[in-house]
Amino acid sequence: MLEIKHTDSDFEAGCDEAGRGCLAGPVVAAAVILPNDYTNKILNDSKQVSEKKRDLLRIEIEKEAISFGVGILDNKVIDKENISRSSFLAMHAALDQLKTKAEFILVDGNRFIPYHKIPHKCMVKGDALFLNIAAASILAKTYRDQIMFKLHEEFPHYGWSKNKGYPTKLHRDGIRKYGPTKYHRMSFTLLPKQIDIIF
Image 1 (cartoon, rainbow, N blue to C red):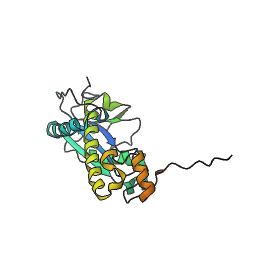
Image 2: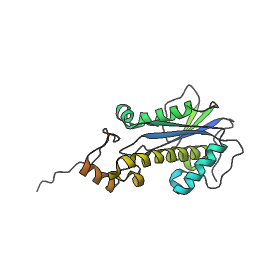
Image 3: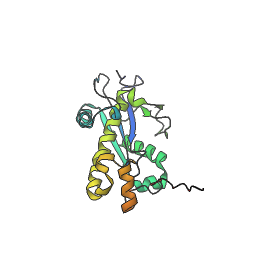
Image 4: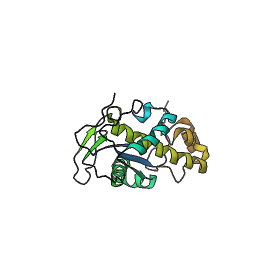
C-alpha cells in the first residue's frame, strides 16, 4: 500500500513527468496535492496500471485532489533546453497551475530544479511509493497520451496511437520511410547510427 505523502504538510505536492524518452511529442508533467485522508487501492505508478484504469483514475484524481496542475513543453523547447531541463520546467509549469500553493514538493526521480524556494525532496521510483506522485504520474501519462492520439491523426505513419512517440520499430521504420515530422525531437538520435563493419 502506497503512503499518501512524505511529510506532515497539508499541502504537499507530488510531481512526475511523462514522455522523457520519446522521439516525438511534448514532455508533460503534473503536480497533485491530495487530501490527508485520501485512499485508493488501485492508484499506482502509471506504468503499472492499464490504460482503462488510468483513464478512470484521472477522473477521480481531478475530482478528489485539493489541487492539480499539468505542464506541457513541446519538442521545440526540448530541442532548445534539453530534455532534462525541459522535464523540470514542465514540473514548474504544473506547480504554477496549483490553485492551492504547495508547502512541500515531492518529486519522482533523483534531480530537480528548486521552485520558488519551496522545500523539496527527490524520490527514486517515488511513483510506486507515494500516492501523490502516483497521481501525478497518472495525470501526466493520460494528458500526454491524449496529445499523441491527436498527433497520430495528423501523422499516422509512425504508430503514435500505440507507441506514443517512444522509439519502437514501427516508429523508427516510419522515420526511415517518411522522414521526421515537425513534432520530432531533432536533438535526439531518431535512428540508430549505422556501424561500419570492416572485413
